[in-house]
Length: 459
Image: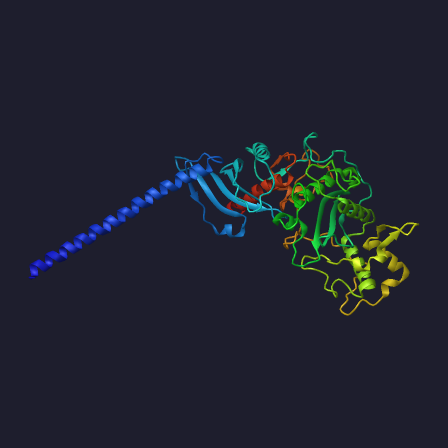
């Protein structure tokens, strides 16, 4: 091969290489173009129920790292490339682990809701029917965020009786009571109520298990490890607690002799422990005997019967519950009638009062005991959480207010950790869908918190 032939070969190779580069680049460009088109078609189809924009772009911001419930955020544009809305993909869970996954459309200028759509892919879906979700969605249309519930429900459809009574003489604070013996499944029931403005505003009924590897009853019911007839136990507990908030007096829940009630929709389980412990808590609220006092008296009883305290006996679990059953030491708790038949069991408070009045609380309580002073200042924020370390905060109760009555003593300070002064809109709750309705509002208010941080909104 002479020099001329070599130059011709090299030239052909260079030309072919350049053509190949153009071909590959063009192919990549065309492929990217078609991919972008396909992506937009997918977005438009996916977001059609919550927005009518012509084009969407995924939002990238480090602020999203602070919002673990938000999966993705998009900005929607019209055909003139003017931003019109935000689309937020958000999944929230309540204290029982039940989930709600929705797409939320928010108008770019007015911060009103352009639409909301449920994505039914939750691991543990919160109970709410398609009809109930549609009713809530319609009531939320064009509402400005954030949102809270009013106190209005339909008399006919209400899941609890409406004949509320006023229990006079209740002191504000957190009150607590638990069973002194375990049930057949090893669970120890407890009830905690919070009183604000002289009214019961929060109620929690749950149970811890003697087996430390077993979840609290509400979570066990959702995972299938604990079952009752009808709805799962966690939902039934939620319903009965909200019924008590509504009527205030446990007697109005009309418990029958078999421990059931026919006046609270969706509750078929035995509520005897709930009624007993809630009445005990209300009695404590009359005297201002708060949860901290109860725990101090628990140590008095443990000191007498087990020669130690909850701490020294290692009975306090990581979530702050004293996990102990007195089945083997039940005699001191028994109250007998004239025939010697046990008719009831004393409470921790009553037995501790007996020991203190007789001087028996001075018994040795074991090394490592740290006696609590009698004048301990009650910590009204101290309360057992849902078992996940997050603390028990029920936005459902937080959101039940009457916006027309500023003197209503059921008003409290926040909704989903947002100050009441920021709430822009109110909607009526959907009858029979308390947990689901509340989670929808929590999702919406989570979007508001993000938007407030992202846009540096001033309120």
